Length: 166
Image (cartoon, rainbow, N blue to C red; front, side, top):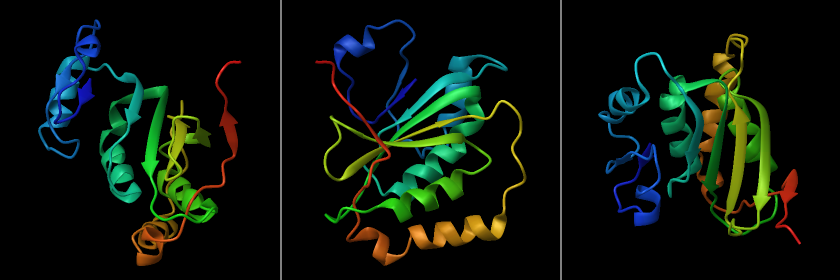
């Protein structure tokens, strides 16, 4: 499923099993449409998010759709950061807290295709249910992510790089 209010490239639309929903990702009509395409009881193996919105908003949208990702399935999410400083470690830690129990094997990457204001997150849906969420810890992380300081002078400190083949 491709969810984008804009047109998709004809070459992408021509691919088998590509279903384009010309909607915003936070449209309440989206989850039932996606489930209808997947089929009753089926889940997706891969979810990709490249929304041009605040990282907190992107995470909240993804959280509302994670129930459609199968155990062992992967989420790849490009986050649009704001500001020009170099260290975004604190932001990444807070986002991992928010996603705790829903995804595991949290990884951050600075891809060659990322701009200096983007970072890519990769996580895996647990095969077994995770431990109960610490509601207080999650609420504090969400509050910190929505604070004005988050919207200004932060960039990334990548955990690893993915390089193009030589």
